[in-house]
Length: 294
Image 1 (spheres, rainbow, N blue to C red):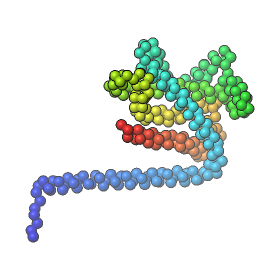
Image 2: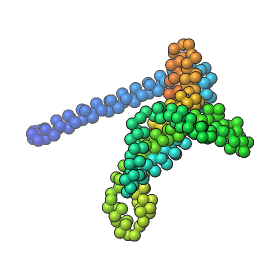
Image 3: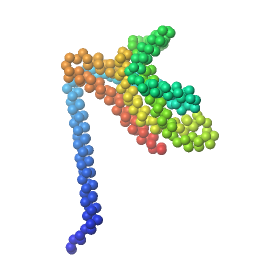
Image 4: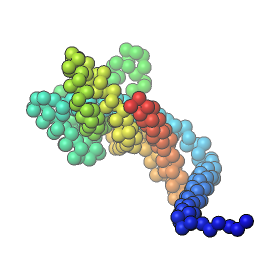
């Protein structure tokens, strides 16, 4: 039986299909190449750590202690930052001009100045003023823990922890102010008007209608800010706070060999990665779960 010649349209479709299949195979090849490179990088990292296994086991308890302190500082700072951010967002959305101006000035001044300068101002400026009027955070904490018979838990550099946490919270509260404000304003006003027509009060509308939707929108930027907060907690080392960065420098600087010093810095950076990367995964999970309801 003689072959039936293909129509021009069929030939064009066949050529187009081959043209589309060709780049697809290239993409698959690139995917395999990417996974191979990732596997090689992971293997090289483990081999690098294994080559310094003696230092690794020697310094591991110190790094774990610094990581725990960094995590506690970051969590406490994040809690206060959420409070400052929510108050600032309510101020930015207030009907009263004076409150809006104060909230706007707070956001613009804090976001327009370096966080390191703010930490030094809190420690040396605000701390000096409060000490002159008789308030000493270390003495207050020591007396309180004495009642609980646990005053040995109060570190000598408690003032650095105190003002460092307040400084980080105040700084990131300004950024969260804009995050929360944007999330609240992104909810359609028609929903608020419909709720008012049903007889709901403003607080009920905010709690049951606006905030649940705003939280879903603010999860990614909030997580990004928290990850950056963990990294910026390293700046508290200038206030004599013994956290992960302080421990890393204390172990690395006395090293004479440059390769050993580099290993200590790489080892410290891995602990920051261990803290931050799970937060990124958690943000993606929460974002996908919350998106199901909308």
